[in-house]
Length: 280
Length: 278
Image (cartoon, rainbow over all chains, first blue to last red):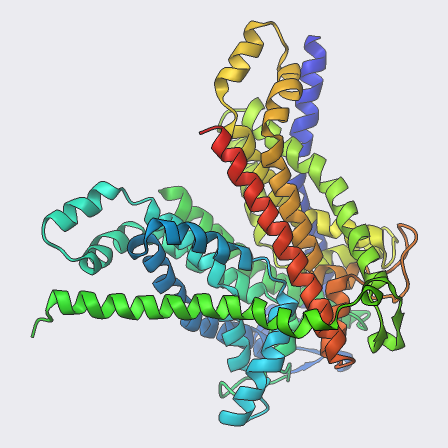
């Protein structure tokens, strides 16, 4: 009996290692496939080289790194203010009954597949940009706007949780001292919920930088360092997805190498988010 | 000059309410737009006919079968792993470096972008293990994707079961494993199901992972080693290559309505479960 219990415990421990084990496998395989070409090209040539012609042996991904960065910053500039406004209203101003309906509704929308967002971008947003702002329409701006909308549910939901974690007693104290509701939010709730809100923004950022399908559909995927928000851009994720289907040899290794860069960026963001939440 | 705090209060509140209204309008608009454009395209034939002319005509039957196939494989693999992990975390160990490592792994895995999972599934399952573009490769890759969700929700569900239940079992002389299988797991089952149902929703909507592991064959898969395109992949190809807008809208409507229904049932399941233990 005793040994059977011990055996079960060992089996469960093994199962519990599945997540960290998968993560390790992913890391190992992506690095095994991609690292040789980075070392052969040279780390700085690979990251700071702006010439990507994989069939001719040129592997520089600077344009993609910058595009990913710009698109993500654009998404945050557009999405974070909207998400924070929404979170403040739902956590602080709205009647609780309304919040009880709206919060789950917003969380449900996180389930809409990214291809659907991309499709809507193509049929609604891209023509608007092409008509009113010029350019090809498929652009950095379109990608940033779509990603900005896509990160809303994540950022809103985590920010609301962070604000709800601030004790009601504090708010009552602030109101009793004569502060208005907005003063209470700005001087008390937001600073107190800061680490949660920062975590929300970092996770939103991770989602934006890792998003593939929506970006492929609306960003245009041209290979150049963007100089305007109306330029067509190709992100790191799009580069992998567009070429993986037909790549072979060194070309395919270079796509895995692109994956390594993306993976490292995401891991840094994840660790930052974990550290910030863990400290509280 | 100092602004009147009451004026600021009024201004800020109106501004924030407007932005909130805008956000919620945008999100509701997405669903309404797709439904209005897509629902009129649907007919019984659309569900039950084969794809014809690359998707320009016919229905989407093979894609429905592929989607079910992939989702089932993902769940069959990920559920025991996820629930087992959660049991270990909640019942067998105290907080320490090992639980921190397991949780860190699950959290990082949840953050891994789908394209990286696609790359990984492609190199390991499709090439190294020689499963080819197949339901098996796709399902296994999806299993890794949904694993963190199942671990997290199962953990919450197991934690919600009152500790007293276990004390009673132990005092009656039941072993730890008996307590878990006969009392704790049945009590936590609705909560655990929530995670599994959410995983179904995510598997149905995923594109990047499936595209590079299950391929995009137009045929109906009949075995684990057949390639096939899921609904989401089919929709992506229809939309990207501009093959047929009506069919694209129709497929999109089926996709988002089924995912919303699945997520709503997951939410209600969790709510009723939590209510029971509060």
